[in-house]
Length: 246
Image (tube, rainbow, N blue to C red; front, side, top):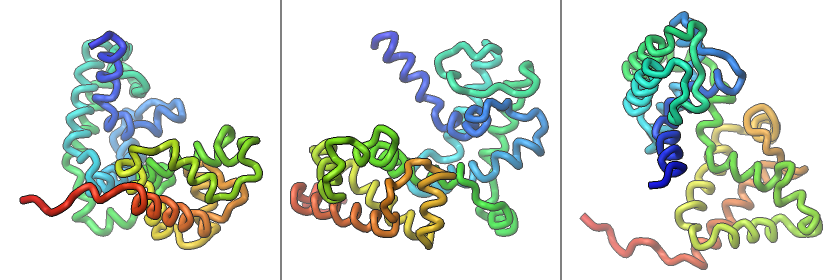
């Protein structure tokens, strides 16, 4: 393994913990020393990560283990110079970073909100938490409608929406069976979570994702995406299993 590959592996080995603390990193803030403050900040993100774990993503025990590893690395290198600690925030008191990380880890792995209805439903959803539901859709909207996206490319100005989606398919092929089903599912989930065009536009066009829609209505766009990608999978990709195997 090359040095670059080794550093890349070390970086992503702690990606779950990095995601949990990303709101501090994104705004250039340290993790508060005060446990009440970081519990309040992190609760919605932990809830979002718990929900992602229910869908097959990292579970909270894995993320807690990553936090403890990060704490050990900070204990050996308070400046955070290890490749695994890239884009990790420190704490208000730098010397307490390992201690605070271990406290957060203990809280994460003992998180009981799914069994505490008052706590679970009493904390409002945040854009940061909801964004965890749509990792594929976030990337797709930015690459399609973003500043340098496909929809605003000069060569695509006169193309129809369907033609643009077929270009996406051609760029994805032959990995479509691994990438498109998840994107289709996230389009359907977006319609289930956000019930109106105004809600969809406020989240995907601004406050949550920022990918925009280049004038397209999300209530029209998402069903077209689902139909186009599903049709391609049916026509170009045979079923990936023949029978259920025990």
